Every structure is written in C-alpha cells, then in structure tokens.
Amino acid sequence: MRRRAVRRRHVDPPLIGPRSDPRTIAGALLLAAALVACAGTAKRDTGPSPQERERFARVQIQNALAFRSQGRLESAERALDAALAAAPDQARAHRLMAVVLEDLGRLSEAEGHRARADAIDPPAPLPPDRPLGLASRGILVVIPPPEVLRGHEARVEGGWPGGAAVASLLRRLRTRLPEAEALPADPSNMGEVQQLLGRLAPRAVLSLRIDRAYCADSEKDGPFSVAWLRVVAATPGGVVAAPDRVRRVEWIPAPRHCLQIPLARALEEVLSRDEVRAALASPGSSRRTWPSPVVRELFPGLSRRIAAALEQGRARLATGRVNEALESFRRAAQIDPDDGNTRAYLQEAELTLAMARELASGASPAPESESGDLEPQLTAAQRSAAEQLLAAERERRDSLLSALLVLDSAGPAPSAQALGRLRSAPVENPGGPGERLARTLTDGRLTVRAYYGPGGGVLARYWFADGASTPVLREEDGDHDGRFDRWQGYVGAVRRQLWEDRRGLGWPDLHMTFAANGSVEHIEVDGDGDGLPERLFVYAHGVLASEERDTDDDGLPDRIEHFDPEGYVMLREEDVDGDGDPDVKSYYERGSLIRREILNPALLP
Image: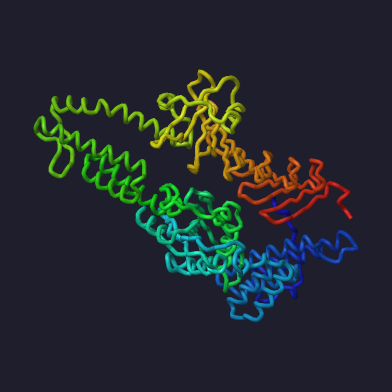
C-alpha cells in the first residue's frame, strides 16, 4: 500500500526558525499543509484530523531516530517536540524523548516523559519477586554455554559462565525457585554428568541455555534488548518438555533494567508452560543413572563434541589414516559410550585395521605402514583376500546404510531398496493415530514395515498401500518414550504432510503441509487437543502470508491477519458476532494502523 501524498503549500516564514533542522522544517510544512487543507474542505473543521496528527507524529519519530543515530541529539529533541505538539498522547514519542533526554544528561525531565508514557500505555507488569507456587527442593537448573554458530560470535552479555546475563538469570532463579540448585555447567563427558546427577540426586532437571542476551540500539526502532532461552525439562524417566526456544524483545527498555527484563520475562514463559511445570512437579525416581539421550538433550555440548570428533574421524578414515581415525572415534566414545553412531564407526575402523593386519600376514609388501596408514598398492593375492574378507561386510554395511536412510526423517521417503531391507511388522494399536492418518492418505489394505533398534524396540514404521513400493506414512517415536508422536505423509515418495503430538495427548496437535518443492504451505495448531485447530498459518512461496485464529472455540476463524512480504500486518479482519463474516477491517502500513472499516452497523454506538 502506498503512502498518500500530501501537497505542500506556502508557509509563512515565522513558522520556521533560522536554526531549525531540515527534517523538522519538512515536518512543519506537512502539518501546516494539513491545517490549510482541512480548513478549506469543511467549515466546521478547525485543524487536522487525529489520523493526520498521528501520521505526522510517526514521521517525526522516525526523523528523531535517524538524528539520534547520527549523534544529533538536539535535532532529535526538536523532532520529538514536533511529534508531541501534534499528538500529545503518543506514548512511543514520550518514551523516545526520555531516551534522548537521558543521552543529554537531563534525567529529571526524562523521568517525567517515562512516567507520562507509562500512564498513556502502561507496560506489562514486571515478573513477580516471590517464589513460584510449587516446591523447588530437588530441582536442578543447569545453564549450558551458549551455542556459537560459525561466523557469528555469541551475543550473551559478559559471556559464559560469569557474565551479566548468566548472573541475572541466576538471581531470578533464586527468587522464583529458591530451594533449587542452579549452576552453569558444561561437563566434558557422560561420566561427569552422571557423577553430578548422582551427587545431587535431582528429581527433575531444567536446562536453560542462554543463546542471546544483550542490549542494542537501531536507527529503525531505537533502543531494545533481547533474550533467547533454549529450554529442556526432564526427569530420570525421560524428556518431559522437548527442546524449544523462548524469545523475548523489549523496545525502549528502562536503562537500569535493560538486560534483566527480557531475561525475566523469558524465564516466566518457561515456568508457565504446562510440560515444564509437569517436570518440576515430578515426585522423583529411584533410578540411579539417567538415560544417555535424555542427558544429551539437557547438556547439548556433549552432542557437539561427539559430532566434532566423528567428523574428524571420518575425514581421517577417508584418507586411509585408520589409526588416527580410530583415535577420533575412541575420543567420541569416551564422551558417550552409548552413542550408536560412534559404536558403528569404531567397529568399522577396527575391522579395517584387522583386515589390514590379516592381509599383511599373507603377502608383501605389507598394506599397513608403521604409522597405521593403509598403503594404496595391493597385489592380486591381497586384493582377492580383501574381497573375501569384505564379502560378509557388504551385507552388514548395506543394512547400516539402509538404516541411516530410514532414520533420516527429513526430506523424501527412502529408496525402495532401503525400505525393502526392513522387516514386516504387525499393525499394532489398531485404530491408533498411525493407522487413522494412513487411511486418510490411501484406501484399501495396509501393510507395515519397521526399523528395529539394537534393543529390539521399533524406532520407525512405514505404512504402505498393499503392493506399493513407496510408503504413504512414516511414524516415529521422537522423544523415545515408547509412544509414536511424529507422522509424515508422502505423495509419490515426496513429503507433503507432517503431524506432531508435542504434548503426549495421543493425537497430533500440530499439522503442516508442504509444497512439492518442500516449502511450507500451511501450519495448523490445535492447542486444546479437541481436534479443531485454533490457529492456521498460510504461506505463499515459503513466506508467511496470513494467520487465522479461532479465539472462541466455535471451529470458525474470528480473526484473520494478512502480512506483506516484509512480515508486517497489512490487513486484519475480525468477526465479532461469530457469524463467519468479517465485521471490522483494519488496514496497516508497515505495522501501523492507517484506516479501520466497521462493516457491521450493529457495532456502532
């Protein structure tokens, strides 16, 4: 939507001082033009409309932000004076004026503007400074180090473990969970974790990784502060609150609490989640050791170290440096001896060395050098012996590769060859989510093939229409609690649908559909588990286009928001009386309201 042009007219010189800033001059000209235009269109109008004043104030606010970013604080103050002259109750202008006056050292004046802004637009109440309403004894809260992405430094104030962000979060934890044990922790291996858990014997562990926590300033929005928390909650029996990220942003925060407020609000959202509260209220368990998959979710640094060691080992193995590769794989095994990938690579490296030693005993030159590297040249006899030794391994390796393809749930379905190596399985739990979802995708008789883990449990199942070589549905146990909670629907081996049971309700509460190229088309969220989505996100070419909400649980959307390509709301439709038709339409430009239409006359006073 394009901004409506305002014609500029002649303004008498006394309105413009000789030392006025050019942007303030332009704003004054716009306001004067609006005054003249309004005076000429209707005799009863004595000045610009409230909408015109609001638009003028927003322009001046943007001017003030630009001036402040350039260090021109006096010009920023004049622009905000003009904005408040046009719209005295503009809360954002008052808050930004407080920031500018604080920059100028005029603290008492700044306090007055902050108080005025809070009176016009009261901020959300601060998180409570009292204990949370549940017993916190026996709870362990760990704060792992932030994740550092390649090419991006960690944005955590003061760093880890002793920085301002970590200290602020620890203070809030002492207030909200006073009897809990809270500490930064980054154990180097599974043994250290089990020692820690054995010593403290917690009935529940809450992992809060601070990925972002800083205060900043931008020309577009002014001062702001950010807090991102990665949250996982678990008991000895398993993960209760799956890994998720909580994000909080505060615009124009109070300087003295710039960092503390978003961290406190993020922590409150974490503690308000039902699955987190369920974990913290757990009565505990007599189990002495925690399962490896659970520990690695709580301490993600373990998985990063294992991945780094395996990557190094694979590179060494590919270049024939088998002994060095074996060192890397053993280092990964020291971090977590129960990791399946690590065990597989260890076995492969050990078998390769055993083959090299056997070849060396029957012919010369020896294929294994003193350093443990494999020589590239083999005689005909050595090649024949190698083929005999590898014959049995080919089947095992093919099965392993098929398993890896099956376990990789992202993207298209595995090949027919990989799926053909799976074992047939009975249709367990007839009428369960897997069968019901599969029957929405195909008619007729269904067959099932399953991938079984080392312990004999089913890790993933594929549903086929009878006689078909490509599946219609895959179901898996994502949190390893013995219940299937994730399903993917295929059309011609291409993933087109995804369902997830994120809260253990026994039926999906999230449904996503994908285009043929893999981009998201729709996301449906069923928050109360009644089978009817309360929120529907619609995407166009992978970009969010609209969101529909059903706030009164009648099965019909009563608020629809349409977004522009930059992510700003451009149109909001509201069904107030619940008849399925919009009663109010609100139009926005870059997120700011510019026009509202009342389509239902019954809503007017």
